[in-house]
Length: 157
Image 1 (tube, rainbow, N blue to C red):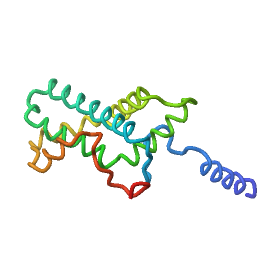
Image 2 (spheres, rainbow, N blue to C red):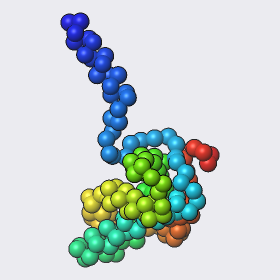
Image 3 (cartoon, one colour):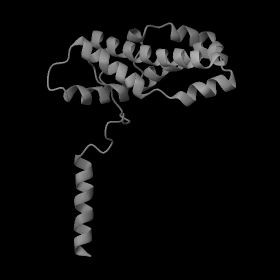
Image 4 (tube, rainbow, N blue to C red):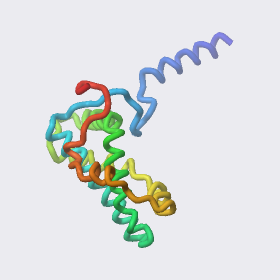
């Protein structure tokens, strides 16, 4: 019995010191700053990757074409609401490079995050429910991804 307790305690301690979440985006309460330009480059790349996925989905499913504007709104909204998680995950990925990142690295990382957060079933639901964006949502979609406001408390709050 004593050995099992020691093994359990060691396992708990090991889990606290390791990256339990793996390569996926974990939930965090703050955001990371890469500088104004690099933040914008990464957000723009994420939104472009997601918009490309929406366009491809609508090309494959012509009945969903009228609902593409709402899909684009959801893509921008995803970056707006999840930037704290995405930026924290990006810091971890940039550290793995063992060198100073350049603009292209931020762009490639943004594209990878966009492809990683793509959820096909969401587009199917939008199409089935025939959801169209409201005027406020259209205005929100027209904001450049680089200029999206930060909604999370952190260094900027």
